[in-house]
Length: 159
Image (cartoon, rainbow, N blue to C red; front, side):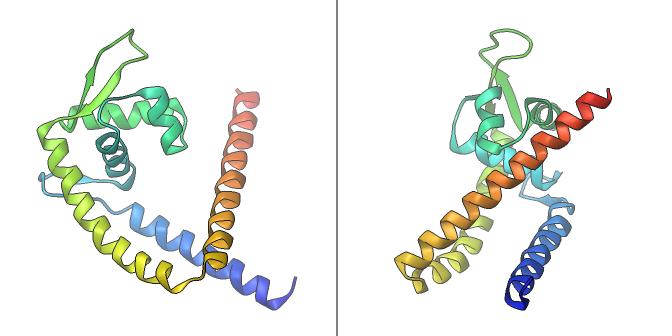
């Protein structure tokens, strides 16, 4: 492997590590509750999609229905989301409570700060560079989803 490629891989792994460290630390987004990254990401996705059902929420977030069900249970117990329009025990819509709206607005404020930084970098890049980065991100996401699926299949086969 050439040294430039190794450097890029090392930088990507550093990003993943920093993301992992940040995502493990709960943050109060204005509600008095400390929320983990998965919880606030779920709140943000629900907030951007108003009432969304569990299947679409899991698809949008790139996680399994089982994973999203666990997160939703926690958020319901913290009075941040409500289950509505229940078709059955497994399929219902999710919407934010007033408290969930506060957390959503707190997260959106934080995201604006982060996105200002990203926007500055984005504007410096050429259209060609942006397309390259977009394609790279899409390929990484696809690869990681395939790896997750393979891990779940191995786990299921052992059960």
